[in-house]
Image (spheres, rainbow, N blue to C red):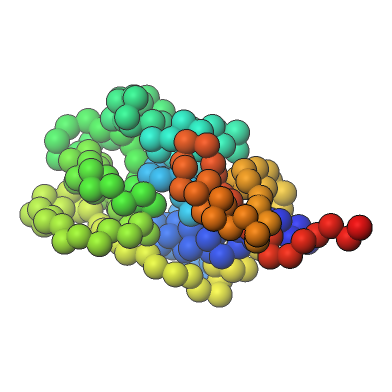
Length: 225
């Protein structure tokens, strides 16, 4: 059983869960290879959901990257390693946290799956430059511009680029199980609640990544007095 407040996160969590699932390697019915590492770019609800699902599916280490220290603090409180690429050197911090592995460009962070839930153009570029051999890239962000990819580099590096959009019934079931487990304080992702009468303020608050996480709008007044 989960609270109504937590249930309000089910839809974005299913999208993040689907993206994480796309980044796992199957090894049987509803089973995945465990002991690998992942990095998630984007510390919004979908990014955090993907990180949580990665751990649920058996990823060993998961780091979340974002430019908002406010949101990174939420992820850190949930138990994730974090990095702010605008203030820290991602390559060196990732190598320190994950250990190292070979790439076509030399030693790099031992990251098996990169997941883009932010949409910044630099993320795919960094994957192609820094991704280890046999690493994979999952895109769930709205990357709406054409991109150029060095297929020869990807061929020799044996890398994969994977798209993820929407969700499937199994993602709903897994998200419900994740939420019901109580392993993570997922309600902490919701930083603000507004009544429907303050919808404009709610939208403005949700757009301020430096002071808000997930913003919930209550559709009716819960005051029974």
